[in-house]
Length: 223
Image (cartoon, rainbow, N blue to C red; front, side, top):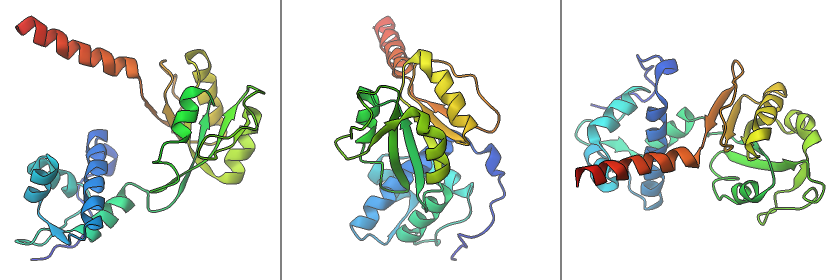
């Protein structure tokens, strides 16, 4: 019996965990690959086996957003991929700006995930006069930091990326929030004081390395 992908889910989306949405991104990548090789349908079991996932977790995660699939047949790859694209909000382009045109900022600007699949990097911003006017290898311009407000308003920037030193990160976060940016990705190794209604995600390499070190220590203690 076919189910309706437009059925309103019973779960409150406000309480859906970030772990769940993170897995949706993984499923989307898998489905995008399957569509590229022209596979039309796939079951949760086959999806799990093929991409080293958990079939029960797949079904549970998708149930948060509606009902999908046909009993005995599985999921329509193209339809499910399109639904996940809409669910993740990348069915339209979201403009992004990077603050900080140092080594990290420049490396991020050349990340192939930008200018593809729903994201468009419009510029890097910096206070260093020697960097202003340059471009990343992929052609992203470096503009003066004082243009942040105008850039956000004129280009409709929705996501800001902090790629500055720890002592500058809070001020950059505050400025991004004050210009109306409501989603910010922080690469600076510092705890940010948050503002209401501004979503922050931090990527701290040190924390991840320490987590790996903790794992190694436990292995050593058990040996």
